[in-house]
Every structure is written in structure tokens, then in C-alpha cells.
Length: 338
Image 1: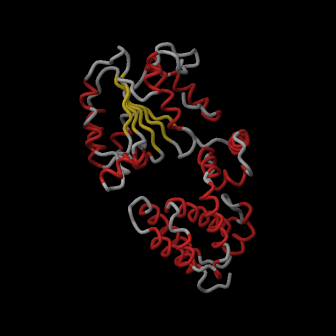
Image 2: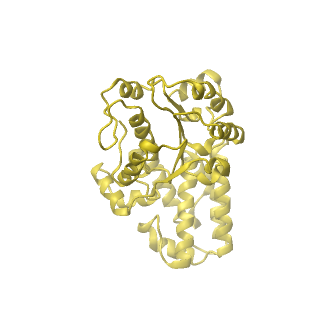
Image 3: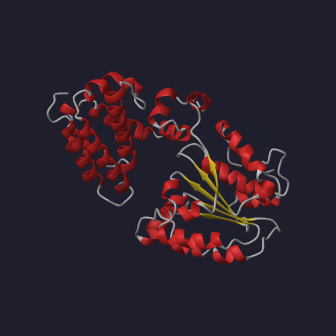
């Protein structure tokens, strides 16, 4: 059974209260890294469980639970991009192409027979779509057709970090459940229980999402590369954009761009309010750097980073992308000596 994190207990209680009057589709939405997917898996398993507990948790002992945990339950389907599947390495090796980061229309159409079958165990049939925003236009419209003509005892659970990217017509056919980022204290306390060192710093850099913070703390390679990046951007006048791009070229582009986005956010906050959010230990440096950056130039760099983040998930040359954004970062300080 997946873990229900302490900060999600109230949401779990709400979901448990829906068991007797389930909608055709649930939309579980909220920031990444706060346990939405684990909760969705738990909920799906509990609805299929033969003897759930009074709190709605799956028993983890019945045949249904065993099938679910083995990934072979006949009344459950998981729809996600190939890039998130366990067979990612095999897929890439066999086809010579990187696994897709989108949910294809063929994946949605493949659900048609499942949607029209009777449940193997006489209960619900459940489809979990994650992350829902990874559906392209064709797959989203194919899903919409199924939602418009629901069959009995068929539940769709859509999990999304970015509900604004879903079709309004899909949103209107789902019961939305919002999962919020936990309080700072809850996140730090949980990270301490996981033996994370310096949880205050890690959770801030992870956007206050505890699971993201845990992954960040466990990824020793990125921690080293992140330290290199952070050290360089604190001294833009001394930063060699080309050498830095070469040193970081094997890093995940999304991680590098995300770090720069947080740094840019803090530069803007420091300039406007005198406070920072993501890098409290570098507050003095951020205040000093932000004082000499024209506001419009900072906003322009923020827009460039947004474009770079969208491109980070495409098979582009990471080194060239890093060179571009690092040179643009240097340009922020072109008329100053930092």
C-alpha cells in the first residue's frame, strides 16, 4: 500500500466519505511532490478491496489487493506516458527513440473495451490517468467522449499538477479535490523523520513540496551540480557561461531551469519586498544583486526561463540550452559590477 502522508489525512477522509456516492470522474489536483499520486493509488486499491478498513484503507490481504499490488488487477487500468513506465529503458533500447512524455490517443482509445466490460469482481472498474495534463489534444478529446457517455461503476481518477492545461469540458465533468502544499512545519517535521539533513534549506529549494525535497536530498549527483550552479550564479561577473554549461551538460535540463526560475523569483522578491522565498541562506547576496537589475530586464529573463522550461522536456541539446540561459543571466548585470 502506498503511504498516506500526514498532511493529506483530511483529503483522504473526504475521499473516504465519497465511497457511497462516487462521481464518474475525480480530479485530484495540486502541486507536484505532495503525495497526490500515492493517495490516488490507495483510493483505487481501497475501492477494489474486498475488506477495506473502517478508515477506508485497503486490507492488503485479499486477492484483490494482491492483484493490485502486483499490477495485474483486471478491474484497474493505469494510463500514463511511456516515459513514466517501468519499461522505459527497454522501450528506448528496442525502438531507438526516447519514450514519449505524452499520453497518446491510442492509449485512451484502448480503454474502450475495458469501459464496456463488466467488472471482473462485480464492483468498480477504475482508470487512473497521470499526469492528466500530459494528454495531447487528440487524447484529451478521446477521453472527453468517454466521460460524456459514462458506463455504470466506471470511475476515472485524473491526477494533475496543472489543471489549467486541461480542457474546460473535462474539468466540468470531474469532481475536483484540491490537495494543498502542507504547512512548512509539517513538511520539515516529515523530512526530519526521513533523516534529511538541513530540511529547512532543502524544502525551500524544492518549492516546499516534501516529496520533491526528499528526492532532492537523495540525489547526491544533482546536489553536487546544484551547488556548482548556485555558486556560479551568485557571482555573475565572474561566471563563465560556456564553461558552466559544459560542466552541467549531463544534468537534467528541467532541474537546472527550475533552479534558475527559483533564483529569478527570489531576485524579483528581493527587489520589490526585500524578502526571499527559496534561498534564505543567500538573502544578502540576492538583495545586493537585485538592487542593480532593471525590473523590465528581470521580467524578460523570467519569460525566457518559462520558454526554456517548456523546451526542457524535448530532445534538445542541453549544453546549447544552458549556454543560452546562462548568457542571458549574465546580461542581466551587463551594466553593473556584481
